[in-house]
Image 1 (cartoon, rainbow, N blue to C red):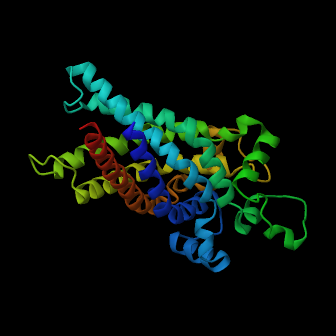
Image 2 (tube, rainbow, N blue to C red; image 1 turned 180 degrees about the vertical axis):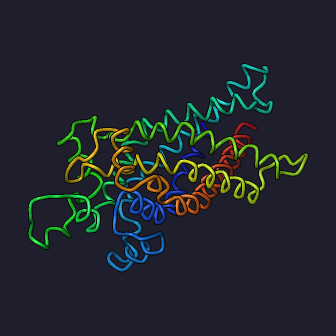
Length: 304
């Protein structure tokens, strides 16, 4: 149970740290009119001020904490179960196959919980003038209406999607997210475990905060950087549908994106994705490990 609680705390802290760059990443991948990362940052700040970087954060702050709780809980408990099944004791070091299977299962679970959260977050982040003008061919509207957001908040966004598309609409882009997260979590948890063990001094029995922070940050940068191509597809599918539908599915999105923008489109946002992955994941793992240590210490004191 403590793995789930620690995952909840780690998830909440990572959202606060990572959301501004997540907004920039989403705008670069699914929007147009941004030359590069710096141009995107300056444009968002100029037109929407600092609050523009935190657009759509309230919903993931409340929900991703739960999502991270389940993902970390599933990974930790699955890994322990597989290790115990293989060696007879859960305290043994997990094998690579144990880590791969636990990571893959975490990725599958993450899609079930995280797809609606990501969809709502991206819809709120993408309510911008450049996206509408460049990507949509709609009937003329009064000029002031272009600046009015379609969604008034996360609850209104969710109810609008359910009303217009049904419950299945909340899982738009889920296939792309599955293709991103299953290998993505393998490149998240496995590098963390190996890097942490590599830089931890021998006979060191407690988690060192700096070691956790560094290993988590490197793992996050690796995972998010390599996940960028499918993350672009997922973001475009989920941003699609705010005013009209351009893509019929994952392959159609890949085909249209490649034909119009070439291979480089699938690496759009890779720099900000990698940079964002370090502090976000470092905070996630540090919050998780420190919370886990406190929870287990309290449990030991209570039991004694």
